[in-house]
Image 1 (cartoon, one colour):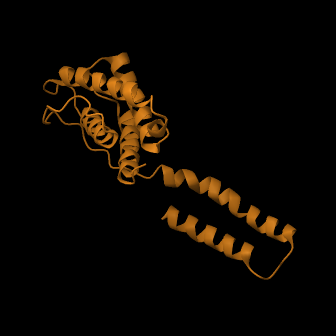
Image 2 (cartoon, helix red, strand yellow):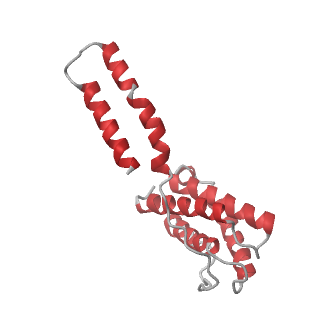
Image 3 (tube, one colour):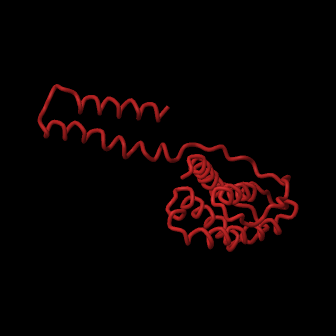
Length: 172
């Protein structure tokens, strides 16, 4: 609903600014200046779109495909998928510590390998995945592999995972 109101407000401001009723530069500047605050206020709403945060679960299938294939798109999707699983694990999950150790090694290997390539390191999917990796690795470093992520951190990570998925679909 907020997004629709924002779009309508921006459309109205743009139409009035580009309308033929006035031709002076000053009038244009005054009219378009009204649209700038709307964009600045509305932009965070788009970036922080609500993402469904699933409940933590003890049931999951332990992956057997750890490690890199050295093909960025495949590796990024695989690391993201493993991170989604790691983020959803509840306390006391079967093989949780082993999963966490494998996850941390895979994240370190991924970042260590791909950050050397400027074309990959400049992609939005890589930078967002790098941020997510730092959050999850930081959690493992601070709390260990046996403790699940707090709700606030999980919510942020799921938002980043959704953004990564969109970027990977666009080959970005």
